[in-house]
Length: 180
Ligand code: ADP
Image (tube, rainbow, N blue to C red; front, side, top):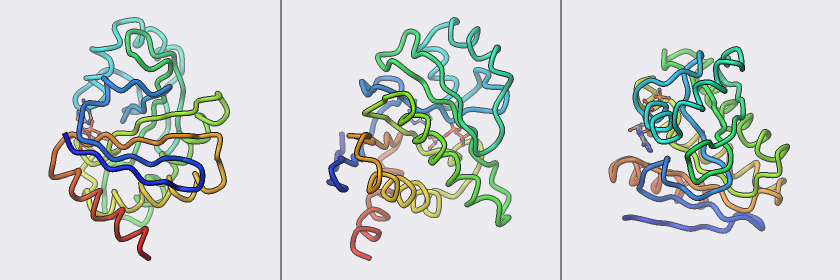
């Protein structure tokens, strides 16, 4: 397992290889679809691990728009909360980076509002939604770093990368951002 830790203000930013469903942070983020339904990738894994009560709770939320975020309880996960956000389906338009940034930002805002001190993110939009991982990683990391600088109530943000290749892309982007 690869792991990297950086201090940002009073908070910690971590990159690890691993599985989002196994994280023991207060919240984990779901790379959700607009219906907040079980599906493939991260959403499928989270719904399977959390159990059927999660879909029952999600059904009542009326879906979620691209770039927005909703919160549920963690059900069978170690995490107390699941924050569901819908990243953009990559199209190459100028909306994509704005929507992806909003997914991270609105997830972080929900975390702050709910007293969540530690949160794990997957690499939103870079699976079935087709966002190239390199530009997505820069948006993800820049948004989180900027937020942490003014929100010390969030003590830990962990990026959980599913492959060594994705981890290497995030690590390179983080090194570049911190050296800019
Ligand atoms: P999206 O639909 O937003 O693209 P996906 O779930 O298809 O979301 O994929 C997002 C990223 O999460 C991809 O890099 C994928 O490999 C990764 N991934 C898939 N399953 C898991 C998991 N259990 N834990 C962490 N990352 C995962």
